[in-house]
Image 1 (cartoon, rainbow over the protein chains, first blue to last red):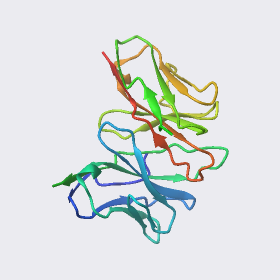
Image 2: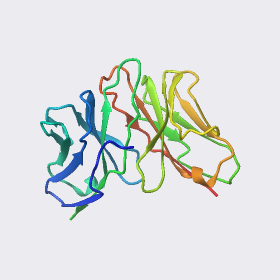
Image 3: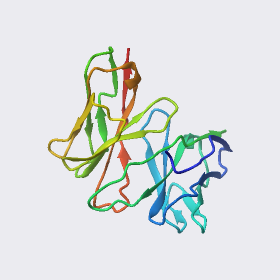
Image 4: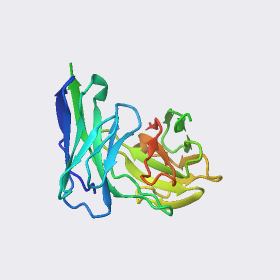
Length: 114
Length: 115
């Protein structure tokens, strides 16, 4: 079972910020928050991840609450190409001896409109 | 670096036939994952390899499914005696043990339709 809860769908106007929430109230101390997205008919694409500090890269920003029970993915200036299903995933960091599967859940379907 | 590739991209087969899919990971990626995705659902984990060793298998991987990665490079996923319920997108991902984040990079998938 997925350890995260996300809204089923969201809309966002092109050029505006898209804020995608995720609840992960049972997150463990050694688990990170990862975000992937999947554009229709393509494989999932890594966006960003974090442990407890806010993170930013060229694609998005990740805001994690102080208690780590929820987070928000921010796409600062959404474009039509950002229309996709966004998955919030919690999992431990991998060591050299093992990896960890991604438990995707159903994600949030984001529609960016003109 | 051409990314993860999967072949074929589409496969249509009749119930009861065997099918085999191939995944070529990013060069020098040690870990290789297989996932299955049915319509309207997120991808579900099937199995993964670290080099040539198959380290974990999901309960979704029934006896009709077998995966191999004989030389620690490409991998194959075979489904024997296919059933209509096997119709899905089969996704492959790879990652490097040198990457502490274990970021998984996905291929485009193989869409299987069982008639």
